[in-house]
Every structure is written in structure tokens, then in C-alpha cells.
Image (cartoon, rainbow, N blue to C red):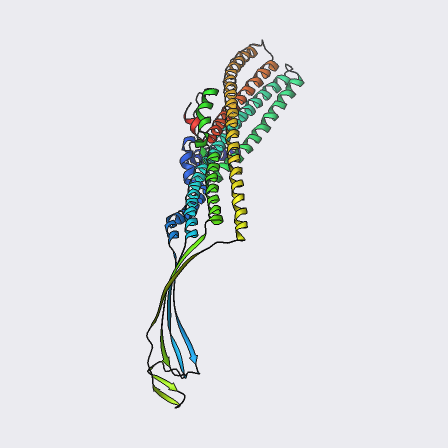
Length: 453
């Protein structure tokens, strides 16, 4: 039975590498391409852009005048005259409204700005999607590092507990030391299970976003992160926020749209509704008796003789050609137009105020993020140096414990300190990566501060 379980165990170990081969390998710096190919939200935005592109391509058709062509039959029963009349009526009507034409020019300008806005929204959405996935990528790697760290802690704590338990049975160590070792073991065991659960949840979010059944995340290469000079960095980017931050760019675009909409309201308020109408109408008639001799329209029923007789087959076609022009100037509806015009001016002031506030707020946020970044760089450097010193201390204490010059409690204390600083280093490293992603997103290029120092 033991051999059977050993066979199952080694078989499982043999298929794990194969499962990893089947998993989709993803590198951190391949995320921009992956987001562009697999983001569902971006595909929806692309379809929205295509729909607006149809309106853009047909915008010149809006300048054409209104043309109506009508061709219809008619029939009249003229019993008093003793015959029926039937025929075809054709009319062509052309109408050109100059107020509508002016609004069409402005509407097309708004249409182009809305199309530009969709393109900006697409770029902003791409950066946001890239930030979300890169942030989740780093978060998953951090939790995987915590899991490996906690798993190592559990393994070492288990060995330490077994050793202390043997020493306790030999009467070398006390019961309290044994219980402390046991508590340490269960503490790290709990952390292992929790870390495994956390990293599974985080990886699930990453996989579902890209519709990947399984994924193997490659490590982000380690590098030196330098402090960003506060004054020079702010002076470099703060003056260009209106060209870099997509939220600010979109508010500026909205102000432009509102200004043109105000011109439309002005047009409706003050420009007379001047129109030109040209028409051409023609009709052709034929005559027949009441019995309806369509086959021989030359004969018409004569009521005085009670029989059919020859009559004129049809009349010549009638043509009516003419036109009219004029203007309409509404009197009472102008008050409603004036209300809309006044509202549009207030909306522009509101949009400009929001844009200015957002610009100042973004500049302040950039200042705070750079400060946080520089503090975090210092913490990361301290945690790495602390880890180096703690590793040296542990090696010294381990040798002292083996020679009997240090107790197991002293060894456990140094060991806990080493584990704490190791966890701090992991936390600070990935926090720094995520913070640089956040600064990049704020400046319109999520990966900018991870591609450069």
C-alpha cells in the first residue's frame, strides 16, 4: 500500500512540469500587446468608433437640400359630366432651409469632435486596462512570493519544532520553548494556506480578464529604482498635464463641444429661418366611360344616348413650375431658444471650472505620488540592506547555536527578524512597481516609469 501511494506521489510530481508547459506564459513587458489583443472593453470601444465613423463619412450628405419626388395615380368619377377621369400625377419639390444649413455646419463640427473624443476615450481606456492588468500582474507575483516565503517558513518552523521537541524529550529544552515552537509552526502553516488562497484569487482575476484557462507569470526583472527629483520632475510634467493626462484632455474636448452647441443655440435664437422652395408639378389625364373602358379609352359612355361614343382619348399634360422664398422669424418660441442659449453659457463655465479644478488636482496628486515614490525607494533600499544584515546575523547565530554558545530562543528571535525583513523587502519591491504604474497612468503612459529609470 505504501508503494502505491509513493507511485501516485511521484507520478503527480512528473506531470506538474507538463502542466506548466501547457499554461500560457506571460511576460510583464508583453502586457501592452496582450491588452490590445484580448481586452473585451477595447473591442466594444472599437465598434463604437466604427459606428461613429459611418456618421463621419456621410457628413457631407447633410448639406444637400431636401428633395421630394412623388409619382401617383388618381381617379375621379364625374357623373355630372358623364365620364370618368383618371391619370398620373408627378411632382418634384426642392426645399433649402438656410438656418438648417447653418446648423448642419455646426453639427458636423460637433460630430468631428465627438469622433475625436471616442479616439481619446479609446486611448484612455487602453492605458486604464493596461494599468489594471499590470497592477494585477504585480499583485499576483507579490502574493506568489509571499506564498513561497510562507511555505519556506512553514517548512523551517516544522523542522525547528521537531528539533525542539526532541530536545524537550531529552530534557535539554523547556516545555515553554516547545510550545512556542509549536505556535510558530501553526502560525506559518496558517499563513501558507491564506497566501495560497490570496494568490489563487489574484491570478483568477488576471486569467478571467484575458479569458485564459491557465497562465504562468514570469518574474519582473529586478532593477535599481532611483529617487525622482521632485522639482525637476514636477516642472517637466506639470506644465504639460493638459497634453498628457487623458481625463484633462477629455474635459477640454467637452468644452469645445459645448462651445459649438452654444453657437447652435445662438443660430436658433437670432438667425431668421430663411428658405427657398422650388417645385415642378405635372399631370396627365385620360377619359373613359363609367363602365371603365381601359382597353379602349377612345370611347366614352354618353348618358344622353345610353351607349358608347367616340371622344377625345386624353388631354395634354399639365405642367406647373414655380418657386417661393421667404423667412420665418418665431416670436414666442424665441424665449425658449433664449433659455437654451443662456443654459449653454452656464454649462461652458461649469465645464471650464471642472477642467481647471481637475488640472490643479492632478498636479497636486502628481506631487504626492512622487513624494510617496521617493519615500518608498528609501524604504526598499533599507529593507534590502536590513535583509543582508539579518542574513549575516542568522548565520552567526546558527553557528553559535551549533557550538552551544547560544540558546534556541536566541536563534528563534534572530530567525523571526530575518523573516520579517524578507517580507518587508517583498512588499516594498512590488509596492514600488505598482506606484510607478500609477504615476505612468497619471501621465498618459502606464509603463513609462518601468521602462526608464
